[in-house]
Image (cartoon, rainbow, N blue to C red; front, top):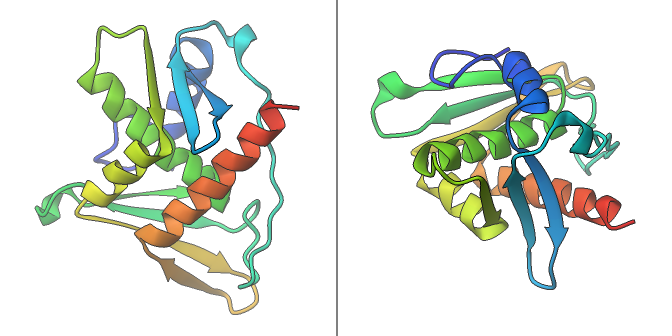
Length: 166
């Protein structure tokens, strides 16, 4: 569920994203993972990648309900949140948040490419970004910080890039 502070509803954004907005293509380079926003029809979109990952804390990246807490600036009234069905969906949501930012900053560009270091700089520039991930074993939500989010994004993009290279 998408909440105030983000531009639009994630399901609506995703549907709109699939039909008319840019898709993210992942390219592997020797030193980083890159995503390219290109304007293509829905027939050019890659198949959605379903990853099943358990980390050492018993979290399942595919099924653990995740709440993303975002504070873009130091102003507390800018705080917002979004919830996702999985850690992976949440990490995709963070990437899409950055991609929306890039589109606002470059409205006339038909294609925008960024690498993971730029995404991480964006995350670092946010006043606060954290996740609450549901743990079925304890029936609680465990908090995670920006560094954890960046690690999960890196793993997700790397796997997507490897799968795209097959």
